[in-house]
Image 1: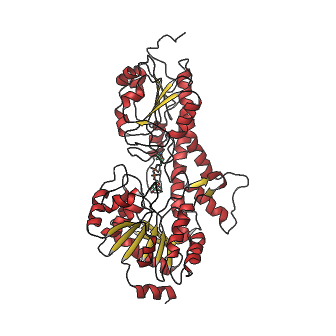
Image 2: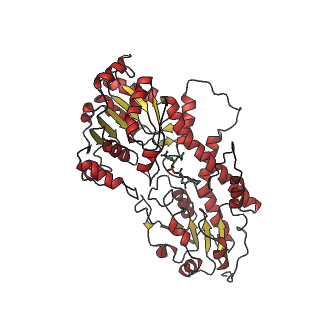
Length: 482
Ligand code: SAJ
């Protein structure tokens, strides 16, 4: 039995857990641990900062600081706080009283071009854990990180701060989050959980931590670095799949055909051994995950020890996919300019009504939203822009209205950027009346409207992947103003 296995045996089953980072990942994780009968107490650690300190009191009142629909979360927070099983605190010294600590802290990229991540918040968290680390404790990184970080930077900082040795005095593992806004609890309970320790004892201890919160999901044990690659690769593959259909959509526009017909066709080839995950083209890829995890994977192979054998001079297809997906907001802009030009109008002086600021459908999450680069291009070209979103309330530097009529009023162009359900019932008659234009422009970046309904009312329509409609004859064309 190794020294660490002895220490863990002496310490006994995990009873007290700490979660650093009270955000979209940390809060649902903490209350699910607290709700598991086998665990006695969970502490949620949150810095008492100006921007996030308010979360401490809200959570200890049993309220959720997360905006947007999160089924079951508010109730569960209330339940475990009332039961005295969950408490939020800014006092990191209480880490010393725990058996296991997880870190769910954002890991954005400072500069994707040079593959430089901004690990400052994560490093702060790891240092805080290292300061109060005791022999026999388990530390787990849940944040999405560059492959090699757990066995590299994290291990080093924890050993420096604690004077203890990873794999001998304490257990260390990576168990990446796999949550999506709008179904946080469901994803944690039902998705299989990747768990990777720096050694067998660490993996075994981490499996003990996560098994009790899984209902449908299974634990999939592997090494820490394999777990890091698994997480970054699954998001990179998704981004690649989206880039593949976005590129096809651009091709279909150029060839005058409907990408959705092609998608149905490609997707129809079924049968054993044939897996087709044809995703959906659109106005862009946003969020905190797909926009950066490719760069974590690229950085992992760059800082890794081994030699990469890859076609000379060829770009990484993963980075190319990022470029295609990052191009889609600019393509939306180009479609808007082209549509206005069909009416002899320019961006300069036109009013653009943007529908949707969130990065994903029916959510208030606007992290890295594709709507922002689109808006910037319109403003730079001299357009006046109004933004509508039924969920997103505040966003630095952008006025967002939940009054659709106000936004569409007198608009020269109505542009759908997020696929919110509300926009599927946008009516051409209503939009035309409110825009007060004989030939308003409508750009559909999420395939939510029926082109013919709008074209029939005199709209100039353009849609992502709709080469079959984008050069339609303009109906009810009013005389072009002199
Ligand atoms: N998007 C498309 N076309 C599609 C799917 C998505 O344009 O067919 C766009 C969305 O509009 C959005 C962006 O991509 O702007 C990301 O959408 P998403 O559905 O991937 O949402 P995320 O980023 O919140 O969730 C992803 C998920 N990863 C995978 O499915 C591999 C989720 O499981 C992860 O937990 C999450 O990243 C994460 O936290 O890593």
